[in-house]
Length: 266
Length: 339
Ligand SMILES: Cc1cc2nc3c(=O)[nH]c(=O)nc-3n(C[C@H](O)[C@H](O)[C@H](O)COP(=O)(O)OP(=O)(O)OC[C@H]3O[C@@H](n4cnc5c(N)ncnc54)[C@H](O)[C@@H]3O)c2cc1C
Ligand SMILES: Nc1ncnc2c1ncn2[C@@H]1O[C@H](COP(=O)(O)O)[C@@H](O)[C@H]1O
Image (cartoon, rainbow over all chains, first blue to last red; front, side, top):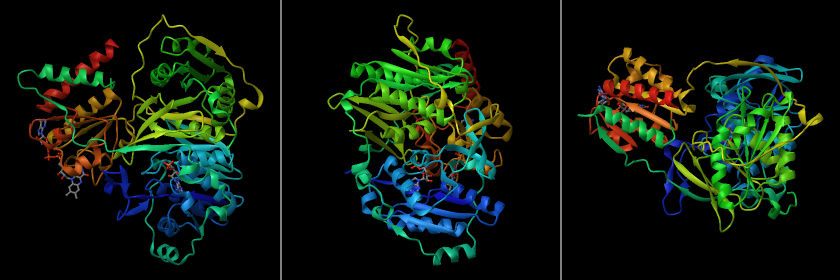
């Protein structure tokens, strides 16, 4: 069985700083990490391999700047077998639609005969959760989103639980399939020593748009259908209304209920 | 990219949602969003409803703001499944060519819309909290939070059509019912391969009223050391239940063992971005604020008028939480009965 795990490198979010002049994110000097939600996808891939044993191969694929090779190595350290990084200036500024196009083109080129694509529910920077199902659609695969448990996989099919509103939906799908996972699915492990050694040594091919045969017109900022026209910082300090219960607790609480009504919360 | 004449694309469409055989209220929220957009553009607002035994229930969508209701009603469409739903919607969008297509950022909307974006060769913006029209350019203006709510982004889709977005549930109130509104119900038939699905639904395991994990929760009721004793957690639970929300806590509260660490909000706990965050008996240390300041609406209840938490509150009550919370629960329950 061949598994592909999609892993994104993201800025460690607690450090996000904004350039107030240009309204863009300052990424220089900011530490990066594997998108925390992708760790669950990596872990699940490794668990499938441990369960089935022989003949399971886990491929890690990422798209990003050269530095993102660190994210691929982190995945190898945890137990993935092979890694690839799509890296090209032409990819810069890609929205989810273009990212998914590039990733799906890369998968087709690099991993023939895959059975399963695993990805995180969403990335902590872009936070769209769109790339996974879009990759599935480009490859013509059904997308199982919000997967909280893989009950069975093999013999050309998968049975999985999806965490949706009001409960869990149990579904069966033929392979190949795209699966995006939620945190409920497992507890990611830390890499061990031999994993780290392997990750250090392994060669991670860097591939350009040309290498994967991507249509240049569909890439980068210019190929992206959506355009970010403005970025702004929501106010952290708020000038809220502060009332006291002194003398009139009923009035203070009624005021709160009215406020929640006005804000459409209730 | 497909060659298309985008000037042909006209009208605003919403993808309604059916759950447990009923039109789900997020559909009414979409109509409220869509109505504003359609009026600005002077075009019709249509809603698509895909389900089983739903024909008789779609009438209520017109008084809620729809000009046209497209219904696809078939027993094979009882539950959302990506293959038939996306095949039907793609065909309809290609036939009627709306300039805007919106859906809710629910598990269904967030699954089908990315697939539509690829099938239709169009852009998609996720989880919007604001939608408007730039009339000069005749473009949809989409605003959404990103990076854990640290920033807001405004996004346009200049060329491809339809312009598509998912909108965060509960970010707009449905329009009041207006029975004088006129509209059309159009039943569309689909059969054969449109109804087949590779994915089979084997079962549904229902969960009764367990709060969502806090990082996903839309409503969070959080408490700190001001709660004084673990036995008072019940009071907070009761408030959380009124909102069908989840419980959060400060580190002091988790350190005292009043609730498990999985509920801790802040620098060394979870970062949350709910619609509503109620902080009771929490002082508002920076490490706590780091985890919750991006909540859409923050309510603070604290007996100390100088507590830090009031600096980030949209509405603050200076007072004893043991007086305020029971009163709040009572008033919210009364309000729920009225509705
Ligand atoms: C490295 C580091 C990481 C940390 N990470 C976190 C974290 O992730 N999350 C976190 O929360 N903290 C974190 N902290 C701890 C943080 O600094 C504070 O100590 C903590 O948030 C305080 O919790 P509290 O507000 O519940 O308690 P207190 O600061 O003791 O505040 C209790 C509040 O309750 C009010 N009160 C008392 N009685 C009543 C009443 N009857 N009615 C109404 N109000 C009442 C008081 O006025 C007071 O404001 C971290 C600290 C460090 C150093
Ligand atoms: N540049 C990328 N490289 C590899 N995987 C990605 C990339 N962007 C997104 N993904 C995958 O898609 C998921 C959803 O990302 P997003 O749609 O950006 O929220 C992530 O959790 C990753 O698994």
